[in-house]
Image 1 (cartoon, rainbow, N blue to C red):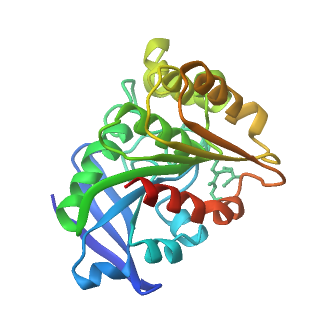
Image 2: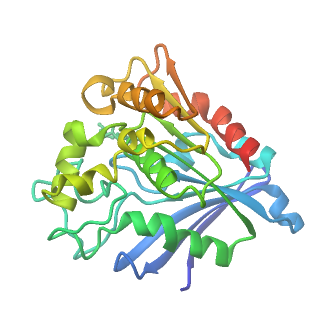
Length: 278
Ligand SMILES: N[C@@H](CCC(=O)N[C@@H](CSC=O)C(=O)NCC(=O)O)C(=O)O
């Protein structure tokens, strides 16, 4: 596997870089962004926080809007932001161009249904292909944490909970907490995974958390989020944690909405949380 440099910008003494590569799993060309803190220039290897973005995003939203680089530079942590779906000509999209299915809406699952299955293998891309590339080409220690927002919060929670040996901590902003019971999740899982509801359960953070576990999880949720009641359902995650005794720290944040202004407010606390657990 090879990677091709797209851009490079110095930032807080470190480097924000974008790369393109041919993905064997997704059968298309992908882009990702990486922030390398200043200590990398001194020859040190660093742990990685993987960030999964939400609906409509690319690798750029988080890197441009969250303001995470300053604290990552201080902590000596790399940030990696992948795209949210396969891309390019020939990659299936929603026939009406909807924002919540197809391009920009891969939901971090491996599609089994047509016309999605050939390209929409985002679960395996995040769990295996992308970390393999990162660990081949960048000075990283192999320590990993995972975080994300909304659809990406769902991805961070489900991927982290399903792979306890791969991540030392998990965090999420405004995650889709119970996708089997909300319109975004039902639409995407129905399309990508078909009618087999048992398969859906394996990608639902509340179902997985009810089974127990011990990787530390931090979730922030804005109380003024437009999607709170109909789509995000953090109460399901809280109930699941209570039933299994899971160490979930769910913080309801008064006045905050679903935007990157909310993420920018609390990203420092999330990165410090991950740094404590590496
Ligand atoms: N009007 C919005 C609708 C989609 C949206 O809110 N996207 C969020 C994630 S929602 C759940 O996954 C987002 O992160 N948008 C990008 C951004 O930079 O804010 C829209 O069209 O963006």
